[in-house]
Image (cartoon, rainbow, N blue to C red):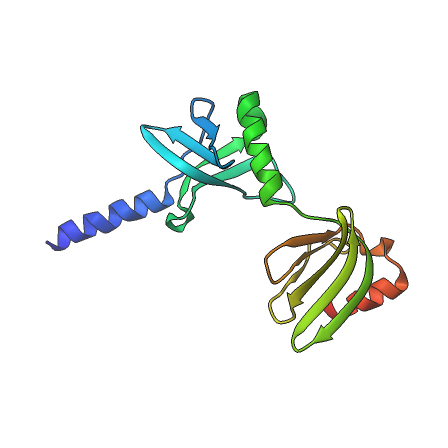
Length: 178
């Protein structure tokens, strides 16, 4: 009995650590609701998520294809999107644009700090916007000495491509987060 239990754990560990590479022969399609589905190896996944494993350095390489819900279990990895068919590239690119929608902050109009939250009023490449961040939740991530990603309380992402392009007043408002 102990040996059977050990075999079960070994099998589960093998499944958890296995990496399936997804190639051209897998079939991606768009659902009626605009989501992405996948058929491969005799299984149909009615809704999947595409996650960039290296979102800032290699945005079209090493894309994790995950089962939606079910703990977002990984189905496989696309090593390089450019090696997939044109149709698949288009479908996956659309999903990535939706999932990684990240307005770029061009101007900071105000930042107000109240009760552990910071309230931003900014102008982005997509228009004027207001959002809040939790001050204690590492909401601001430095990607380089000058590039920032800010994640608001609703997990929306905003980017400042170069803080040196902001005015000195705008940089002073950001000092609290740097």
